[in-house]
Image 1 (cartoon, rainbow, N blue to C red):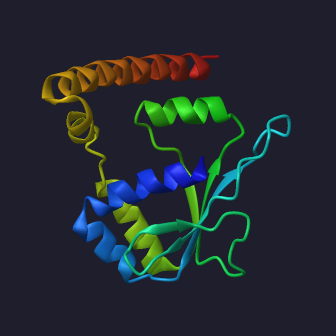
Image 2: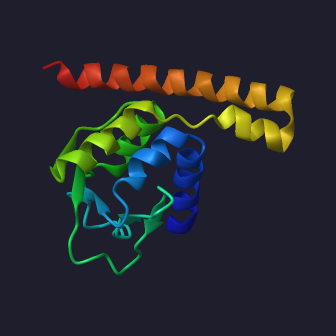
Length: 159
């Protein structure tokens, strides 16, 4: 699964020359994404440690992370289902960052500016009309999910 997720991340990075150029400046450095407070009853996620390649892409380190991590980005994962739903709804979780400031700045730029043109990829696979319809339905679903999550968040705040 991690190999496939890395391929998707690299596909998105490769589609934006300025993204790979920014990462090239950090070749050989490592980034760890930490899911903190993961529920003990669930199987633990694999290590989310990546090394930046000379091409400005990511290489998953697997079970052998480098001895020194240059940047750590941690997120509260005590409720993985909620975290996933918020992600699908386009909400970003609060992320604690520690490590190299220049690398953190470039990773933040990637998070803020990179977008996956899913419709373009779907068009290559299915043609323009189905791709447009799939994207339209997915957008409506995401808006509905976002609205539902906002409603739930409002219920939690009330005494």
